[in-house]
Image (spheres, rainbow, N blue to C red):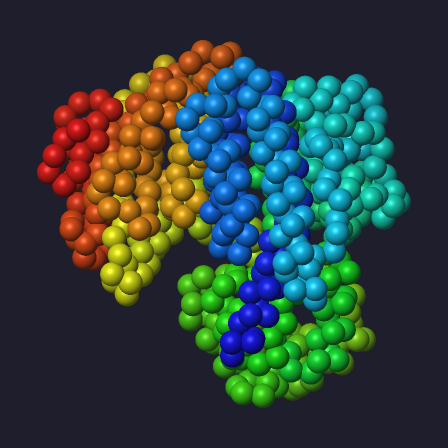
Length: 539
């Protein structure tokens, strides 16, 4: 069992190292944005360094954490606002690159990642189509900081180097143009160079449903090119998307190798478990995008494993695909009852192409469903139901491990005045601004959700009352230093009231903790603007 876990750990270390070149490229992009005077670049950089600082040590790379933490501390102390701040930050990124090169040498040879050159600097966009609208798209994205290329017809997709993978492909033309549909499908199917988004700027009045079916993510009209398109593109490039991860549970090594080879050739990461015991080790440290389960396993059958997976809330919406030689209707019904989303018939070598498409389609759909179910549509934070479920989980974890945690309820003061003065669209922009500031200020382990309306909730793990007070003060300071703005650049000051409850002092159940935080927030609102209230004291 120890050897199995070590193999799992080494596989995760390899995955971490494989992801780092892209993270370094994102750091360089934000540093360039900071040099250009973009106000949100410093918080974004601080968040990125914070995540690396927290994760490096977890994967056994303490030097990586040390360097990232130095950069994060410098930014936290205001270094990002200094003239020439991009110079020291570039030096830290170079140190990180060198540390990662050294880290790769301490990973066992069979778990080392292949040497991949980091992607060139710059968000990349490819514009397909011509005319004045294409010129406007080119200018709009260039102004937003993209490296924009023309062309990108579908026959060129397969020849695109991985290092030149675009973040965004913009198709310009009528929504019923089948050549544009073909281009969208080609880019969507090109796994290794697949863009993070495919956008259609519809110059006609065609059937948009057909374009969506072909693989288009978002459709804009020409008059949205200078406003909505660059905002979407920049957000997409900064957030990005992790690679698809598959957990394959298959005791036949030949079948496992066939499946893994077919999927890895398409840039899909495969973790292989030969039995249920090994699969459970993976489940403790991994949340895959798709489960591929054999029915015939040496310890228990795949149906039993599927039922076990479905009992864990983390995996309720993760697709399960069975690989089985059973062809009877009864077996298919049993698979569906166990929680299966699909099943493929062995021998799998006869349907590897179908397997690849099933994995890609199921992974994408699963991610979108999870986003819809768990995330707030405007801010991208956890929605109310998911936040409360996480609060229950936090209580259970704290009980098992004798730990503290705190729950903050945050309300924007006099938010109705913003809507009345500027309109609801600007009000939504203010909510989004607050959400992003909270994300960049909080720790990577903290959970943030939209409680409802202009209220937010934060779960601060391993945090006592004093720690919660520090976070609350950071939130207020960040909002004072970075007010929201209208599209015309007019600043909109944002102040918040915060109620704080701590487990177990203020409650031993999730409902009690939430109620205590809600009462504290009410006292904060009545005490005055920009106030934090704990159990029974005002600060």
